Length: 489
Image (cartoon, helix red, strand yellow):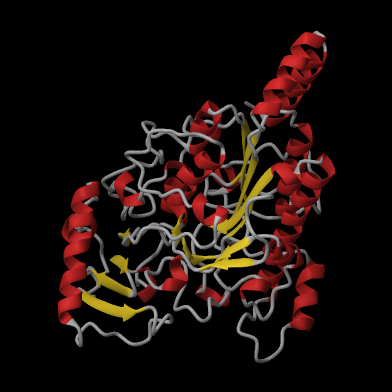
């Protein structure tokens, strides 16, 4: 449903409800007294925001006062992971509560023009139940604002469980962050254009505009609980900020700073401003005390071309190293979470699905879900999740990453088991050889000291676990000749 039509429909519903007789009102009040209203859930996730991109996570450049304040009111998970180091597979996982590889999403669309096993170009399989659909069944009004990137045509937020769908295009990113939000590249102009914002004006910035749409939605809501899937395009390329912010960071960035990109710093600040606007709207509406706020990123920060630095983690987006998958995660649940606390439990992207349903008071059948409900950690900081292994699987998309292939864009599978992390890198058509890397994350979180030759038994143990996992979930099998045999290096 078009977002603006939805607002009008919602207003009619509110007016109709006010005309009911007094007995009906008393019945509703009686029910609410004995059955507390379900909390609203605002899920804010950035695109390509790195582990160390925020003030409270250690940025030496970026100013993020709104998110820093939110952190003081929240639980911060300092070992949170995305379920894939690139956008689309990670987002499919969030929407379904499943490993991307279980969905066949181990790449970025097609491989060198040859369709990859698993989801085709239309994205998220239509057989999957999204978190939007699941929460609608629990009585929630659902809204998606911003980046989708997991389906085209009829496979869009409006058909996948969201009552409101605003500004979701069919591309990875906006053509421009500046109005009219479209690319100068003719091949990308249509796909990258942001819909539903045609009434904006020159000088408008996309991240600000999305926040304004979120504010409108929040103010339009009635007594019914809502789920807002606030999916910013920022801080994905094209890296852009208004001139005032760029000039500000040119003055602030010192010669010894690790994060030296003033335009990226400005874009991060735009994101922080937008989060602040959403939080202010919740306060003005008088519902912030019954609203759960979750903030995270879809994968690690992009380090190419000096965009950012994920220090002390190695590498960035697209990589199997910690910099590719570690993300900031904040959860504020008023009356439940303890403020300004830190949890060291490992949380991963597909955990949000069962956790949101638990927060909503649902008790659904989750037998085919890979995620785990981590709400007990929010209610009691002393709680622990049952020990589990975490896996990542990525094959290369030559459409997304051109040859020659950067080392951090290789094909790999990875497992984290206890303190140990094993990477297996696959043979590639440019002569790159298959090999293993083994790290102890407790002793070496920056993954500098490869222990594969020192502990061959541990390599074999973890390799067997990876093979068993791939078989259990039906992951696509890597075949270099099938995927890349036609590629000319």
